[in-house]
Amino acid sequence: MIYDKIKLLREQKGLTQAELARKLGLTRAGVNAWEMGLSMPSTQYIVELARFFNVSTDYLLDMPRSASISVEGLNDQEISSLLAVIECYRQRKR
Image 1 (cartoon, rainbow, N blue to C red):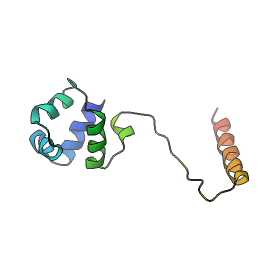
Image 2: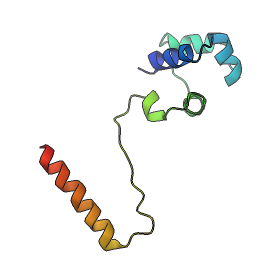
Image 3: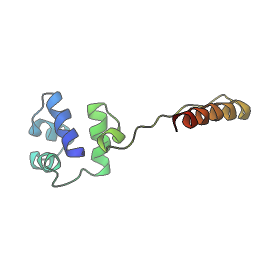
Image 4: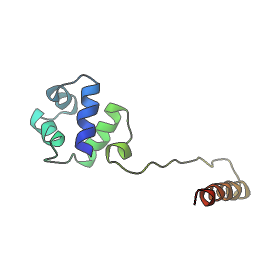
């Protein structure tokens, strides 16, 4: 859950709740409420937390991992070939 991750990341950086709150322009009580699961950070703070701790917003929100591949500079046939290879690997895992 997000509250566990905020606390873990904060402690890994050696910060108190008050120090993290100051860096984000919040009160210590606000950070404490997040860590206790009493409230949820707004979208703005989820993004700020991700930047501050150098993690993804997906990580903070426990979203499934996914990856993206840039196909910039590839033509339609090359993109089609890549998609076919990806589908082949998916079929092998089933």
